[in-house]
Length: 141
Image 1 (spheres, rainbow, N blue to C red):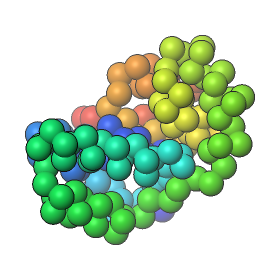
Image 2 (image 1 turned 180 degrees about the vertical axis):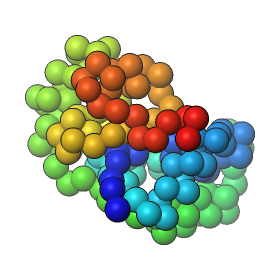
Image 3 (image 1 turned 60 degrees about the vertical axis):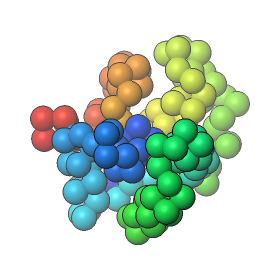
Image 4 (image 1 turned 180 degrees about the horizontal axis):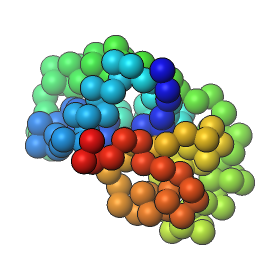
């Protein structure tokens, strides 16, 4: 079993039918054998995206509950050290690569743990590549 850093862009592809993608499906399928790790901001980011989707009537509360049940059942570990690096390494990565602090937190975690990253965010992928972090799997499979 291997591990990877999972970002919110891929996670949301599992929660919204119109965001589904072959890459997202490939990553989801890989969780039958691999595990994911996320920065401690991930649960808040997921909750926020789902709340906004509810407010915009994109999903119902029932659909949000179903999505959260799916996510809770997956082998996703929340990193408890994210905050320790936020005001130094994460901030630095955000500055150097013009990333939000949120995206920089995923990159910092991948660098710190020496893991590939699963993301569909183009800017984050470019920054990861520049830092020597590989993309988990590839969109082509």
